[in-house]
Length: 273
Image (cartoon, rainbow, N blue to C red; front, side):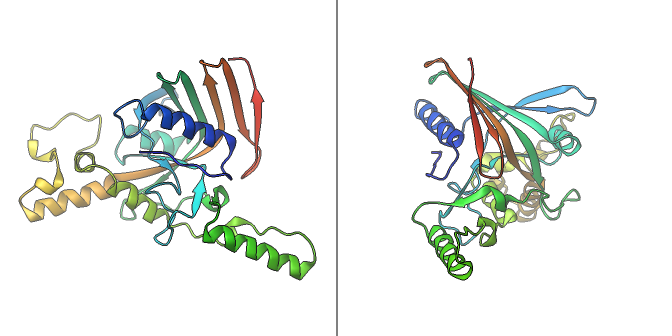
């Protein structure tokens, strides 16, 4: 996977993308691996490795079925099994940190923020997102979306006789279920099958049929449909509303902390590594 960026992206995302792409070019991994830190139900720290799926708007994470690469955001995503421990931990306390060490580029990236979970609509835990992502997206340069915002800005200026830039969220439509479905479809058959398995962390059953290696290879059509349904119902996409990013470059001995000031504004501090 190649991360992408545009001129409207905040500085930290541009730096994140630069380092991630440089690291992935030197490995055989498709996605980076980051440590996700949460707070367990007894108030203790809990950490595990996850693979971010990318930023909303990038690659296969288009914001709706009509989006052809017009939108970008700083909303990072990853996914998990609906019955995993981290789901209950995030429902209880959605403060998180993500951290990764890129050994080839000698860079550490730590992202702090809040996790917002999107379950399958048929999952008993399903609820609409309280996180309004329309405030976290912007049009890419030269796209129809950017031209529309420019046109809307001129129309508003003509009406009120001043400089008015319409909010991006006045024209953007985000279909979160479409994003979740596209994220699921872009997993390998092996990973898709894992979502049909029993709850992670529980005692393993002696029945091997509960652990299909790949759903398409199941010969019985009824069984295949059952496992496909289970996998989709257990698939949770998690949106990370990042509010601080700490990037340490040990090749240059630099460290910058990026802190969100508003929806699209960030403060940057140069600190000691």
